[in-house]
Image 1 (cartoon, helix red, strand yellow):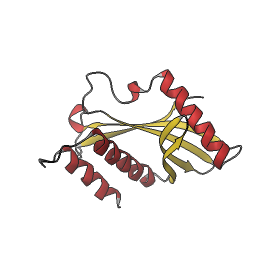
Image 2: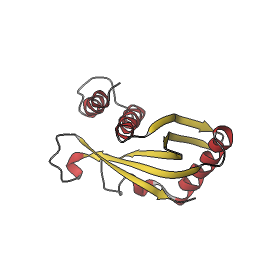
Image 3: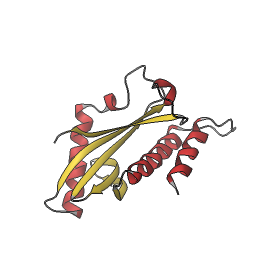
Image 4: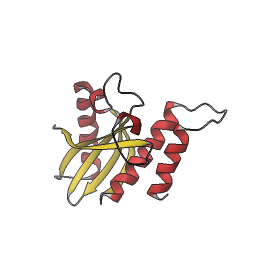
Length: 145
């Protein structure tokens, strides 16, 4: 799917009046797809998505030249309890590091890596002139292992 199509899909999902209930899984999947499209537009190459290990899951694994980037996508419809990036606790960071180590052991050896966060929120929470219904904040090197 083209990035604009994914963005429209997420916008439609968030504003639908369908009788079918929208689950957090639907929203999360759409947010991850929109984030992947956004990062691909920024020049990153998709390596894996929803990578599972016995430690849990990493949303997106991408590369930028010789750097492997592990990306956690967080969508928050409200900033009442802080943004999505604030929800990545120390325990969650440790879990992501374990999953990343597992990935590197099974896919790559001796490469540089980093942990990024895509923090998504409705655009009304951020002052913007953009007509998008949501805002993407890409936090590079969100934490260090």
